[in-house]
Image (cartoon, rainbow, N blue to C red):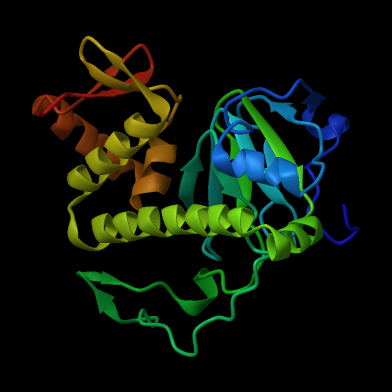
Length: 259
């Protein structure tokens, strides 16, 4: 890998990363197969919950493929508040900052402008460079890293790889649009329920009571995902439970079937 790219963080002394055999899930997805054709990757690494793959603010570097498990992406504002900007599952990628995109000349959400009853954050609170968010495992996970220079060269000759990368970006954009819609227009309880239903679809399984999110999420995690405070999450969860929309069973959240 090139010397300036973001490597796995960190070595065994920091996170105890252990090489494991490649498995068929993320690596067996269309994007995973296209990445494998593009060139060799770092051996898949096993991560325990809470272990960091990339530190926030690291220069844009490698592309990372989640082989299995769940990886959270987090940003920290100058005020110290944290936002969980995504939870990725098997076959999804992160570390896309090496795909350089010029920032827009003017933002539609300027600091101090009211958007859906909320004030846009101060400019110092918004990440405007190409640095990476923190990437942290939320569950036992496997992650591989790919050299962006090899990917650029491969994409120039393999349109399938370019198409799969664009598809990955499109999926991330669609999820960002759904999140923005919830943040601007929905009350906290509805935002929280929508977030949990999205997580249940990707990281869940059916149970007798509905669909269980197979991630151990704290109320602080949910607040970071829903763009609110832990106290507001606590009130919203009580409201959702009272209306039989969301339950907590055995340390996991379960969304009820409302069809």
